[in-house]
Length: 139
View 1 (cartoon, one colour):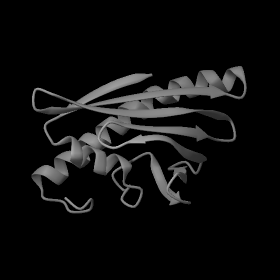
View 2: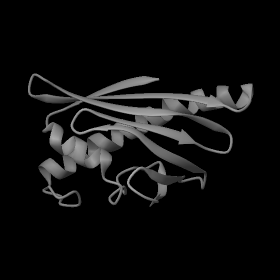
View 3: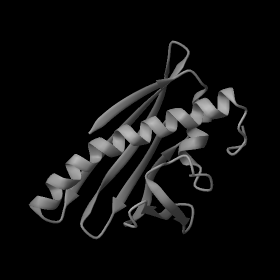
View 4: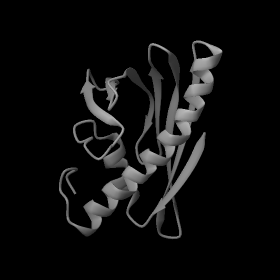
């Protein structure tokens, strides 16, 4: 699954929001996020499902790659940032494998929804920070 979002704000702000593990209320898919250390955290979905997440690549202002592991599935999530025509281009790429064929099918359907929600939520948070002067991310 790959989705793209173009936003009229600096790449630095997008990077700050995406990688900030302390301020995650903007993500409607999460109930909570538990930071374990700089490279490991646990995401708890609004449905109570926990996934262990490991940062596998972190190139500031460019690439944030994660390995996500849950009880029923595992996969990767990658956020790529670029600039084009004065806008920041956010590319979200996700792959998931279920531990069974049925879980794999269900997870692929979930990824479509996750991608739409994540980018919608990110867009809303960036709009809030730029237009309403929100300061939850040090902006």
